[in-house]
Image 1: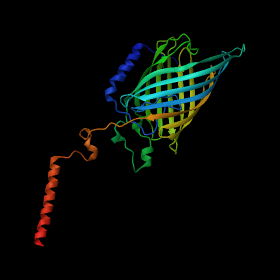
Image 2: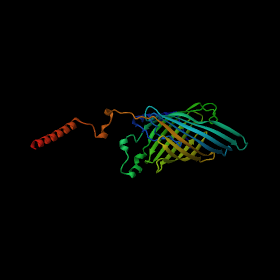
Image 3: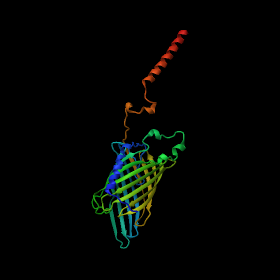
Length: 337
């Protein structure tokens, strides 16, 4: 399968996205940490204003290439730093992965070692549409567990975010030889809340734009909360297409909440091909510093409809008349007595 892209198409993509901004809503700050781990897919929602979140892990991979007759072992560490900027829908994030690779050429017995960043990028993510922005229309049904957990057609409408950022290749990186120091990256993110326990996330990205080997990739992730809501499982499919490297990966895993601000996880996966074949696994954790504060809204600016409507002058008059009649009756009864 071949993908084609151009700057003209890229410009059109951003024009459509920014035209949609007036229709966007506000994402919701959550009391419980919202992590992108243990998969590689990115959520459509931000962490919330004044929330600093760190997601990091360590992993091992066995990578063998049948055509090049090589065997590789990789030890890696990755980190993602996320911070909510200015308003609820905007997030800045840094993603880095440092790998240490031992590669053996089977035909010659030569061994080499490579160590550097296989991922090093900085970007901004902005939520342009949230189907659940109106909390009044999406309140849980307090009388029916079935109503809250069943599939609804409106759940097919996804939250949508756009991402723009850049990759950084510093020094003589053995994983990206002779590549530009900075290369742009753009992405569209969608997220569907299929049921109260299940969510579907998809990412479509055009990466390393302007380099000799630009790359298209997609990630589709399905997560499900178990009966004990502190535990969740996920399965994820990732596709990569470029002239340098193409692959299809499948991964899965489990996550566990240790508290409102901390999560631990375990993941594993493999590729579908042998050029190279890949088997990998890892563990990690996510932690946030929650400095979020809800904005105080003046009473005059609040919507009164949720509290019985505005108080009108005639309402006060009616109440006064009723009260005066009641007082008059009491007075008369006292006189008669």
